[in-house]
Image (tube, rainbow, N blue to C red; front, top):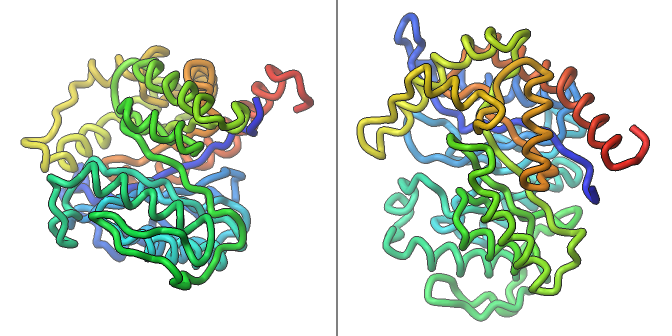
Length: 355
């Protein structure tokens, strides 16, 4: 393994109704909860904290770099990432400036996961046509990479971007400002990431654990075919989960909230997504996508992802459906103190290097 395995958490900042009272946490309360989660993640030794971008009133995370800047002021070492930046409806100059600023504030801990976005509310909000979804993303990604590469950038514009020739784009980040390609599992995203020599962040929801193995293989093939050193290729996964004291306890805690999240936060796709308990439990088995169970079960599942995809990073969404903060913080602590050390030791042993 050429990259150390990184473990982190991700939030979309969704606001779902309380299961008992039906009350919705206020956006201000939710924001405070997110910062508290990030601070604990830093304290217990997790590697990455990521905030996904959504533009609806049942989410509070429409401006991830602003939230991450607040986190930067309260943390010391954890990496700060978007997860994802919906690049097709963003200005690549402004994206670079925001994350370069975050990088300066955090002493080089910022990074971008750039994706097309599975939610499209931002397109009409910022005056873009969803019909241009693919072209907007492709052209803005190329512009963002050109901006990162040099200043002034060599970018002469495209149908959806302007000429940046000779323009000073500041500030510049502390380091290289990593840019990952966020993917929901399409072959096109795998090939794009590989061809550009960028790391691939694979978003998983439900389904068999190995469902995207062929897409990951395309990534590695494209990476090498484009002439990039094979050892620099990198795959990360993002998945829902929960770490409990016991297997059954973890499932019992996560299920009702996750089911609410699937129903309440997917309404733009129709009437929401009903997830029966038996289907949830099937996803918690060794061959399912969910990272839920005892600490050892989560370690075993992460090892399986490492084997299936060559993954060297995992971001867990532990509180989907607005799990109560106390349970959410407990899961973060278990992830940092019971899962991460064991996983790192196991992978180091597998690689034949000292733990």
